[in-house]
Length: 398
Image (tube, rainbow, N blue to C red; front, side):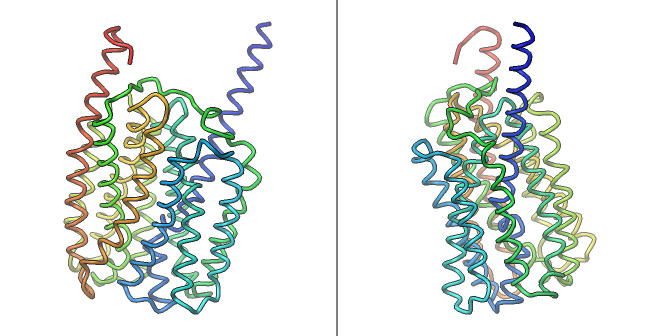
């Protein structure tokens, strides 16, 4: 009897591990273009003849495709088999990227980017939701973000060489092929939310206004990221650096981001969430003050590395916080949608204020949105912490 229970527990642990691996792989593929967006925007300018403003809008259109699907998932994910949705989405992303090869019409190209984004949206939504419903979401989100960044570091570094060798074609071939690698792993993913659910230990049911405030904080934070991240490559070249220097600096920043994501992966929420969120959000805003005007390679690299460290330290704690605001995982699904909505708004918002060769206004908008996010996230995080502690002491049950 004891041996049977032990075997069953081992099988359950192995299944949970395979599920997490599959979710992380799909979670890397979903943002395969967004995470290297500075390099992709540069490719649109360099290889396809877009100007900086139209390239920003094109990047925004793709993220709007992602956002459309993530928003739809908040209403309809419980009605569909997640494995079938993910399989169809992987194929759609691959097909849309392949169809972009050789397209000469800018309008058709942008429309295909929207389609690719629509497919990526369900991959991001369902993979992030699966991770959010694990027993230790702060740690597992840290692992997910870490692998996304490792992918980004390698691809971003290779993009200038890829453009020199094959133009945009080689990059699009890669973006078409990568999603197909995940197809054999889909069977390890849950068929629906009920099969994946595992309540976070410190989760409490916050009041609706506090949940709404938290979701607005998520939106504001990723508007800031969308504003800043899409233009970092162009900020670097406008500051006097070569394309390869910027690519190298951004690649190193991805490595710094891995270190940032490792922090929550290692410590979880044992020291609380409000302190790392404060350090991460305010620290990221501070870095942007030094990414204006002209600069040398080493200062640019230092500040983008520190910026990416703070971003990717903050992201898992934000998602882990969202998982702790209710006991059914519903806030996580909405938070992923708010995240992608912010990333869609960001590049377009930035495009409205840039002038040729000048990006100072982009950074100042991002700084303001970071500050707004920090003000909004503190109340729900502090109240959740207080209620979770009270429950542990036997003072409450929710």
